[in-house]
Image (cartoon, rainbow over all chains, first blue to last red; front, side, top):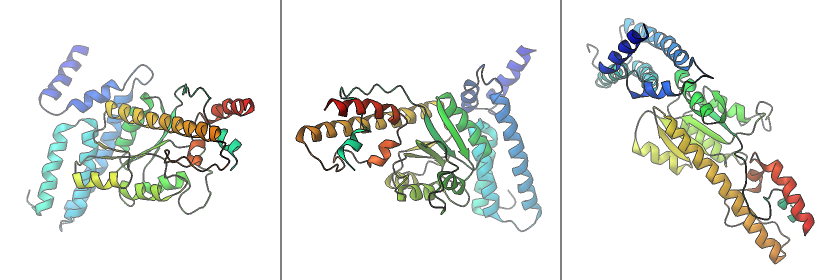
Length: 106
Length: 210
């Protein structure tokens, strides 16, 4: 089972979902703090859910407030960067680019 | 301030700065809960005491700089270093930096800015305002270690400089305790060094020898 987890983790790296920042975080874990990665990840998911919800609400409103959307995305990108969620970070960057040019379709 | 009083803050006559690494107390400011968690861990693992706050306003409150003059009730532990995110709603890291450097009580505290954006004019602006260093996010353990070493080295040098200048003054028999020209710090900031209490007793020995 441990081998399976290891394989899944490796594939996340291979597919570009995770980057070296995640490894940095893993290295901060030790016997005295064995759940650090789990705790950070949990915080990240909660925070991301909150942000995605806010973004969703903002998009539903119809009239696109690009500044507000950009601000949410900045936060989302920030936390994704800190945790090593590389693909999410990339998507955020694209989203912000669309905001910058006012591309509602994108 | 009498010369004797000044001496109380000094390190032993041998000039040996054998300070057992006192723990730095770092105030970390970031609006992102994920980043606060990460920076806290990075600092703790680097043997620092950490207090995290979620905004520049809270940081000022913690320091007692938010208008309640002399309200240092919240801050039981002297802050040796402030690490702050740049982009925060309300008071940005830059605003916080300015407020701290404008304050006579806290301007000596080194401030490090963190940002996920590598914008040169921003970095220059912060350094010009007195920031000690600028860290690009994501912050890594190596970054924290480097900052810590920088801060500890600066504090050690300040102690040494003040000590040398006072030894010189003693030799010249100067009474007026004017601040040493080689040290840019107020004596009030020397009091803030965590090891000052130990220094106090050692230098009292020194003054009795004279």
